[in-house]
Image (tube, rainbow, N blue to C red; front, side):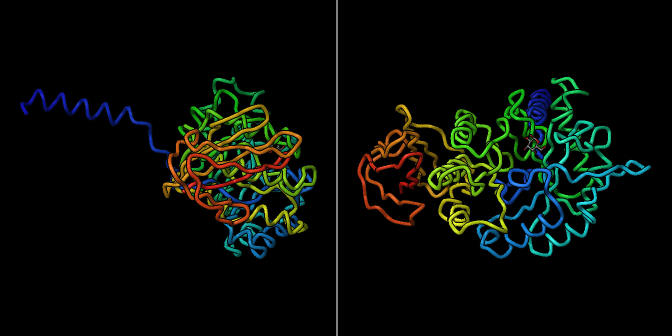
Length: 384
Ligand code: GLA
């Protein structure tokens, strides 16, 4: 190669390197969707040190930790006042955050917390506005492993187009604080966050407004993610919001649907119920290992809708081991026989079908598989 060519090749190489998106320094975190518990959906502002310890105790002993639930996350309402140096302190419901973190870590679990880039959180507590580095350092000193960062009152102090910079500012502050902290963006899907969430260091980002414990609302949050699958992958996930399983306003079949959809979406699995007082059937839904394996599949693909007819749908996603997961969904009011044509799921020929909820091999099927699906229920299978 002559000198000019070498220089040209060098410039092209350099441009290529510059053009590549900066690898998120958080990417080793959340290689699979984060799993744990968050206080908000059940306790809202009634959260306290005792509530969080009870959740940690439950996870450590009831099989959830073994199933992969690791993060114990306080949502809003833990904040007290800043001292004269501006350091944030918890309110009286949390006497000692560092001690709480140590308690959680002592059980082999991780500790999460919540703030806002605005002056106030959504519930009106102190946010991190103009205190980002100081707060990140405080979190690191306490032993925080996960931060949910919720837009809330930031809308009053920033222009919408500043949102990316605002999230990056906290990401940089977390990096500077020097402790690996999962960064969970919460801004309800504004400004197509899925297009830029990873580039500002997000390990996940909410895609919709808040979930409620209601079948139609839960389905709406999940279904809104169809088409966003290309933005999800190891280290950076679409987040349809925390789980409502066990909070009491859906039927058993509807909660099974909720869990199945979240696993197909490779969504973060943050239980949102009272873990210290849950029914055995709730625990069974949260901890079914074959279903969780679909969420935690190392390939990290998000399912998409491959067939729909009225209230009946089929979602599919390829798995790391070469098999395909398929979810037959009945949103109708009666039991319905739904047929999965393999070709719709990108699968051909003869396949071994396994029912994941029941842990049962259903046999060998060629080109299609049909099953009765109950009202508001699902049949969750792999094709191998
Ligand atoms: C927002 C978030 C919720 C929760 C509350 C807390 O509404 O979307 O998930 O964190 O704030 O105030």
